[in-house]
Amino acid sequence: MRAGMIEMTIQQPWVAVKNAVQQGRPIPRSVTALYRGLGVSLTSIAPVSAIRFAINGRLLRVVSGTDSAPSDQVKVLCSTLSGATAAAITGPAELVMTLQQNIGNSLGATVKEVVQTHGVTRLLRGYPATAVRDAVWCAGYLALGPLFTREVHRLRPQTFGEFETATTSQKASASVVGCLAAGLFVVPITQPVDTIKTVMQGEAMKLPSGPGPGILTTAKRMHREGGLPRFYRGIVARGSRLVGAVFILGQARMRLEEIFEEHDLLKAREAL
Image (cartoon, rainbow, N blue to C red; front, side, top):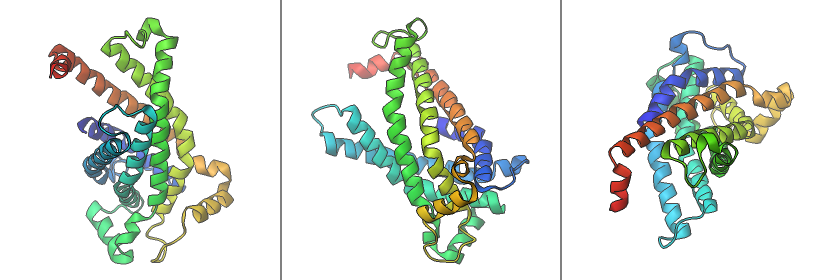
């Protein structure tokens, strides 16, 4: 969780740039503007991680039972469902962050203005798009990450070792490369729905109270505005954040595994 907070703090400017480009707004230039909305992002990490962990674990026990290890397909399914469910927190958090970046208000002032003007339910605007994005992302990332990691071992055994006999550091390095490849593959697939989500959330204060235009209505309007390229605005910033995230979190993972090896923590755990 701490590594995730560090990654998010370092890369918040990419998020600000992505959101601005997707909405057709000027790209923020000042440090303050680039980091506006960071607080709600950091605050949401703990509950989102807890929900995903709890729901994923519960689903794994229900679907596969406790007598056998879950298959890769079951793992992907459960992680996908848990990601979509956790979007109930991710969605409102991203809506508040987007509005902060657009309007310039503080976290508390933004939430208060949204609730007082349109009610609590307005915070859920864009939730379906967020859930679809996270579900597709988890499915693609979790399914392709291990597959690409195996290919890295197969194609470059002199660097990453054989899959079955590679050292811990070699496996970690191969995992970073495999997950990066998987992420770059999934980014273009999920970019359109992410752009729709950002546009829907960015106009949350402009629309009258009530349900407002949904995903399909917003998508049709965006297509009229700029055709297919309209849905891929901000993909460079989003892809750049992915590269940074995989690198930062991968380095944190490798460092932790080195510490575990130095103190024989993995062996001690296996002995238990």
